[in-house]
Length: 209
Figure 1 (tube, rainbow, N blue to C red):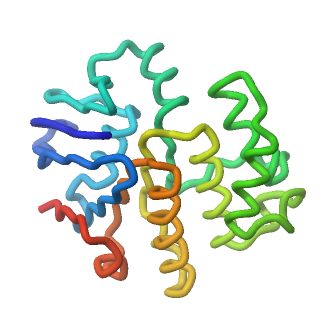
Figure 2: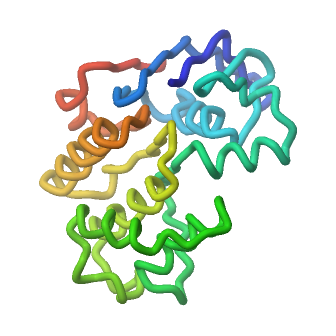
């Protein structure tokens, strides 16, 4: 579902990254770990098309996203890539349900309200649909982010430090939830993190050094 080859990226001033090749199939999960400054978030941004590599290929299904124009990349990302970022970037004036539905409308022009309700119910948030994100706990906000990332049935789900701000119980709940949902929806899941608690949770791992 996603594979990379010879990915290189540089910020200049000696900050150069040569990333290992990765390959993750539909329904599989990959954990990418590494210390601060090793390029974890940079790699996630490259995989999500938020940044472009100086060299190499990033293949999602049959599309090399590194070769797409900005307009085509934006369209492809909206339909095929779900992002769970460290900052949730909710629309503060919209409630939980509206934030998830908005993601479907922006990508497809349609409001997938029923699917949003089903996802939020599956994530244990059916009693919070009409609350504002600010009224939720951090763990609940993280689950809303997951629902929003899955609403368009992406081929690739990317999660950047999804458990770093959570206590042990919620961290393991979110990690298991992401892995289970990836299998259920047939989505390739890539998690980048420095959270050592997750190393026993995922069989496929790459450590950046």
